[in-house]
Length: 151
Image (cartoon, rainbow, N blue to C red; front, side):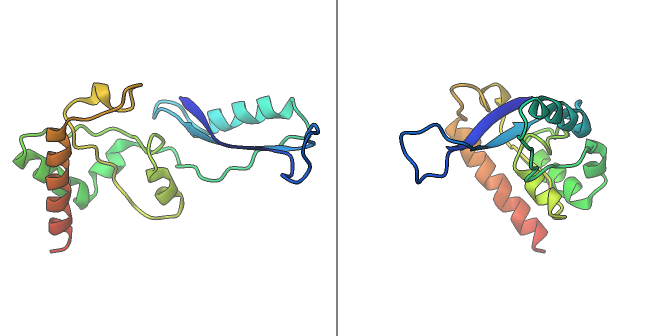
């Protein structure tokens, strides 16, 4: 899994030049589909419990799921058919935890994650990038998906 501190605040922002009595951190934690959400939550709570009076507040969390659930949806098959027209093969992966899709799922909004590019090794690498060709093809794919969903 990966863990990124996205916000860190120490003290109340009013008193300067003194050791703060409190701190708040917002951490974006993304876990692989093979790891259970409950396992990660228990591990974090165990670590945080060592630093009382610290506490953990969960802001968003996708539930454990299986990519086969998404493959049952008609929208999934529509996307697969569109990808075939671009000579791309759909590879179903559970990535609810690895994308912002988890926020929608937690709110009860159904969704399917899609990354229509051909060079996965450059996605989320230290020098993250995709080719202009992939970007343009991705735009066309998303336009086709939107048009198909609106019929």
